[in-house]
Length: 359
Image (cartoon, rainbow, N blue to C red; front, side, top):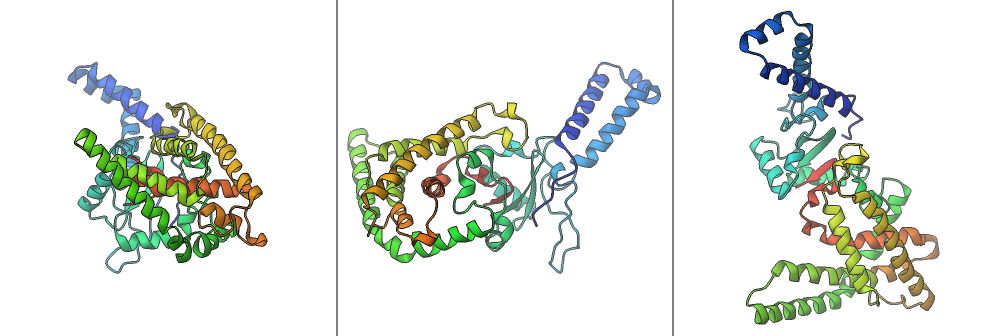
């Protein structure tokens, strides 16, 4: 069900919109009588009306104008073949981008329910067609489908090495290799059980932190306590004990911020729309991550302290030689592993999947 590039370009839609604006400006500067005469006799006014009609043909389609050329086959007996997916028409040019703010997941879920499109709903984020599912069984089929592994990722995620890590690598030999490592090594029941002591210690520290905050302030920032505890847990689970935990924590927090940052360039291929310099900051952070995490990997390899340990880094270094990853791939996997577990704490976590959104 992966779409092919649409033939209706953003530039064409922008031209039509500008024509519409000019037509409206013309009508506001003339009287009703003058407008009628202009409409009857002016070729320019006639052109404006024609462009307006054409633009409506592109915009007023289920899911918005990005879905103009995507008929979708349905396989249910009570549905017609080649029927369009249900979805909001959205705004010209922007589509449904105005919805992608605070609590976007709740807004989209409510919208899908109102349109009776919980299984699949079409949406336009700028010129990008998006499929949304808020139904468990449909979401399961999407997540287990081969098309999901080839979904596009946003520019900030690409710059932060997501496409080389588990869950985001494109389907192929490398992806299958990562999947085997994840299933039989990193996330095997024995490894998870071996990290129980870390989780217990972090939970005890969270209780102490909440108790101390209650005594000092009379209130507890529960969200802050959970975020700090989750960060400590994942850092130690991924890297084990090391003297760079504070620096790693700062980098992970910056990564959260950049992944959550809304960036129009993710939806429109125009560099000047990156108003916050997200791509530049992502490349700078990725270089720092490569240096710091690469140094941790080299130190662990030199002293051989990974033998018998259960953290992710030790697991990767303990793989047989024929299954071992390159250092650069190892850095990407370890880095993304620190970001994903807490990605649901970011305000725009729904932006992780620009083509398929699971609610």
